[in-house]
Image (cartoon, rainbow, N blue to C red; front, side, top):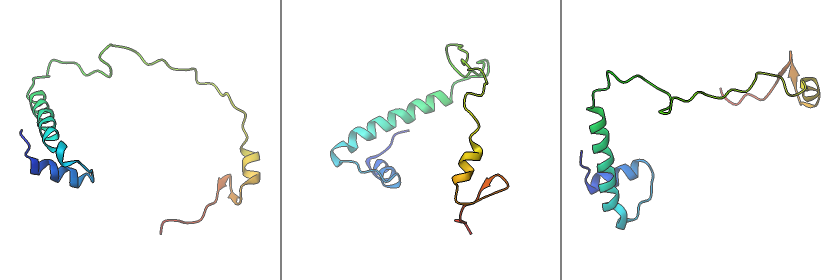
Length: 95
């Protein structure tokens, strides 16, 4: 898909981006290239490709699920302006 200079100007306006008029031609070429790549990728047959979270088959290192801080809830609620039933009370901001 090839974009025109007017398309890039409209996209920049919608995205509220200020683009220097000297750079519009290069943006047009770059964005058109990206859209062409996306078109090529969407036409690929990926039925036999297994979904993966990472291309290197790595696993996420997880830390142990252990409590590392003391429970200071009572102290924090003691200095809060308003609490009720263990909850912080705040002014209503949405009607």
